[in-house]
Image (cartoon, rainbow, N blue to C red; front, side):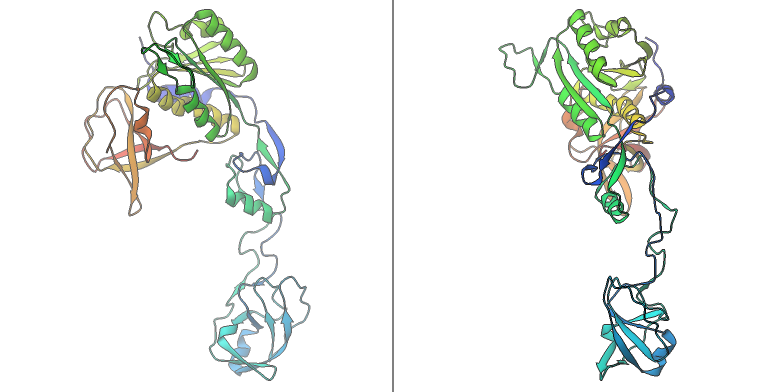
Length: 403
């Protein structure tokens, strides 16, 4: 079987056309975890006027040399201060208050003594001390949050400060997930047949896609029957943007998925990529719908879902990428096991600002060991022409952190 290179398959994936970004308006209060479908742009400077950043006395800096100043009164936060400070005067001004006209400095309460309606300067401060200038946080026209950003608690806070009651967010792409194989036993099912194995793929992948911002549709399992698979796939394409299946794409007598996909009227984009794990992956397109058929082993299906389904989800959400790739140093020697592009489960930690990779507690074996992705999990990328790598070598790593 002729295999595409990993780089070629990723380029072909990136060129696939998806429908234009669909969005909906939702209240800010329920937008957490959604993806912005618009740039959030500042309409005005923040702050709009010089503002006190501490409690103290608003003064003209040159007046501090006088040693004492007359207090005109208080300036609480939220009041529209209209008094103008003249030479030898000051106004008690509180954190968040508009600075009075004529004042250019705030001397903190701790730096003065109050006596007979005046302040006595005990310790001077620099000009402009404790005054937030106009536009310190941002200026009118600044793009504060870019389209394609996943909304977190900070984004919620910034948009609330801008009085964003409603916000445009990308409509979640719908991803249907089905596990194929007569040996698969679904969650909660019991069997006296020791040859059957518990299904985890459909649950793993649904959780992965939900975490990445999609709406996952759990379709359970279907046995190795060509017509049953055909029926399930047809129904899935009616309700989903992407159909993801696991199993049935290899070269065995009961691997029917690779035969069913063309019968659905889908065009095969590519089948077979020179990667480990997951070389039998299949990607197809039918109109504006996609089918991604993954291997059946748990580790293989999860890795290939990260590599080939998450980019499609990202495009539908208007995001540039969902996962991060960082450069890291090997803390241990690494033995390359094939002449393919490999994606090896590893541990990542940050030491003195640098990423380091090790393989502690990672088992060497088949592509079924999903537990290798537990505990600071990441995927180390090695190229086909890489040989064994020594301690200190820089490698690229996909971080399997929050998507």
